[in-house]
Length: 79
Image (cartoon, rainbow, N blue to C red; front, top):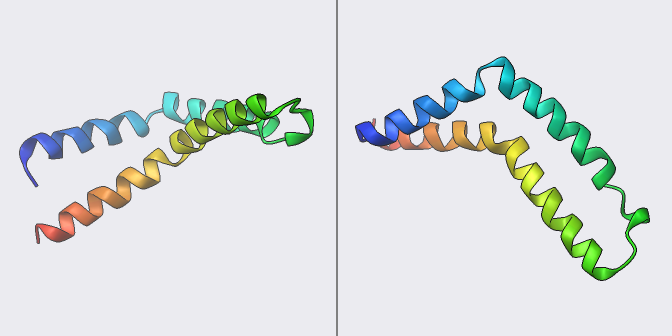
C-alpha cells in the first residue's frame, strides 16, 4: 500500500477510535430511529427525501466497518 493511502486509513481509524466518534454514532442511532418510520410520510417527495436521509446516516453508521474491510483487502493484496 502506498504511503499516502496508508496515512489516509491511519487518520480515519484515529478519528473513529475516539469518544467523539462513539458519541456521533449514538446520535446517528437516535436520528435513524424516527426516520425509519414510514407511517408519518405524507407524499412521495417526502418519502424520497427520507430515503436519502436514511441512506446517508446508514452509510455513516457503517463507515468504520467498511473502512476496516477495505483496509484489510488492500493489505492482503500487498502481502
